[in-house]
Length: 56
Image (cartoon, rainbow, N blue to C red; front, side, top):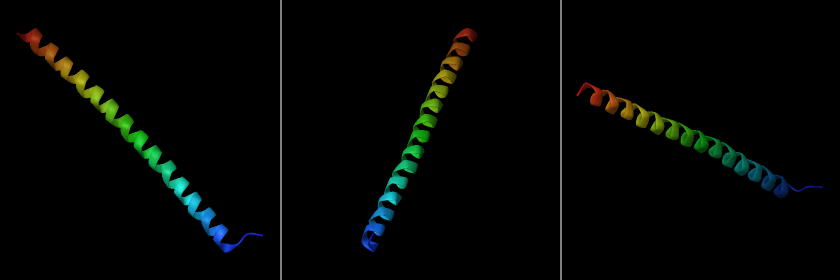
């Protein structure tokens, strides 16, 4: 039926695919957090700039 080498190759392939899947999820989450944080900082800086201009 199946030899040990085919079984081992299948297991290695599944492990590589799962590692790629979890790495992709991690990197997508990091990119989302980075984008949201950058946008938040930009909006906060604009708000502070408007407040300082109103005080002057």
